[in-house]
Structures are given as C-alpha cells and as structure tokens.
Image (cartoon, rainbow, N blue to C red):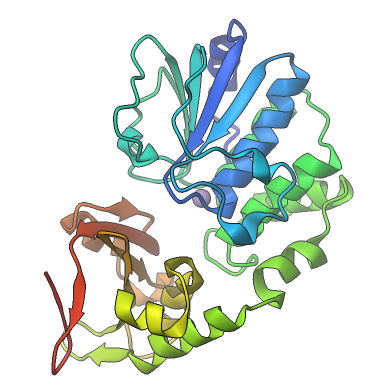
Length: 317
Ligand SMILES: [Mn+2]
C-alpha cells in the first residue's frame, strides 16, 4: 500500500518535543495542501501543540468551504515557534515568502512531488501517493488520532481535487480505501464534488470561454495551448484563479500530446502543463526547462514578465 514505507516514527520523534508549530504550503495554496495542513493541524492541536498555518497568497476564495480554511494567514509567522512543516513544497523556496528566516527551526517536509529535494530534517515524501492528504491520512493513523468529520472533509477534498475526482492515473486502490474510510468518518463526497464542479461563477465561465477561444494547436510539438492576458481578464472582470482547470480541459484534445496554458498573475506568468499516461510525455521535464517542476502528467512553471498579444500570437516582455 502507498506511503506505508515512510518514516512516520522519525516524524513523530521530530514533533514530540515541538511546542509551537508553523505549517506552510506552496504559495497560492491548493485544496490538497490546504486540506493536508488543516487535517494535520487538528491532529497536532489534539496533541496539545500550538499550530498556525500560512501560505503566500492567502486562502483562495473558492476553498472557504474547507473547515478551518479562514485561519490561513498570508504572511510569514511573527510569533515564537520551533518547528516548521512544509506541505506540497517540492523545493523549500516554493513557500514564496521573501526573507523568511528558518535558521534553528526543525523542518518536516511532507509531499508527493517526484522531484522533491528532501530538504527536511525528516522527509515524508512519496511520489506514489495521489495527494499530500493521503500521506497525512497514514500519519494520523500512525498517531492513532481519531478522524473527525472535519479532518475527513479536509483530507477527502484534497484527494478528490488532486485526482480530478478519482479520474487521474495517480488514483490507486489505496486512494479508494482511504476515501472509503474518510466517507465513513463523515466526509460528504456529494458536497465536496459540488464545491469543485457544481458551481461556476459567471466570471469564471467568461474567463474559460476566452481561454478556449484563444486555444491553438501546434502541429510540430503536438501541443494544444492557450494564453489569457491581464487585459483580457480585466475586460471580462475575472481573476487569474478563475482560470484554474483550463489546462486539464485543453488536454482532452485527442491530437495533442500535451497541453500548455499561460496566464498572467501580477508580474509573473504562470504556466500549466498537462498530459495523459498513454500519450507518453513527461511534462515535468518540460516544466523544468523553464525552472519549474511537478508530476509527470501535471506540472507547472512561472516566469517573470508580461504576456502581450501580437498580430499572430503572443509575446513575453
Ligand atoms: Mn498535491
């Protein structure tokens, strides 16, 4: 079964003397890493520890349904703490905060990215896990922490999101076994599914419409791609986060070996890459050529600059 080989004992030994713990995910957190933070936070609180959660960019508005999500802070901690747990950060710099001094802190690194740099004093990294939340589930089992309805909801939301609703190749028998246990503990799959797929703001529909209208096929690379500029988002009245999920849908074009979607987020360009197992492409390798990384079938990168429309396409300035 996935993640059973991880050194939960070493993680426990690291956390036992901790009194004040800060948990951080990568910047612009996602349901998996936020769910993992919230689930583990409840467990550590039950164990008598003071816990706070941070992520640069704060809580994405659409994740307000996750119990406890509003406690997420988007600045580095200013209080005293001894231990930092990173969730879903393949590289420690992915927390995204400038000038966060981590010297003299114990570091626990929990992740499922295959290219994780193993920067922690203890690393719970399993690239076969479909989600960081799967690893947290096993950790809570190891600690004998009862899975409350709140924990179950957060962990199932993470697993549901990272597996695309149990559709991706990363979904294993273990994923279903964990999901079953979480449903038994009170998580509602219908509600979680509805939060992700059942509601779409008008701004999001318009942003997606623009992304699909802009889509093109690159014959040479066998790549389907699209770009939405800041001006276009402004014109539509949408935000960059409304474009989450576009790369997945572009990737359903059968002729394409992979999809690439670029959007502007502040002074950065965010690139998302997706493929399917049978297409035989490792998009994390493509992401790495742009200084990014990720999984074989889902990866990303960011570049400094602005996307501008030209007569026959786009350029980055
Ligand atoms: Mn994840």
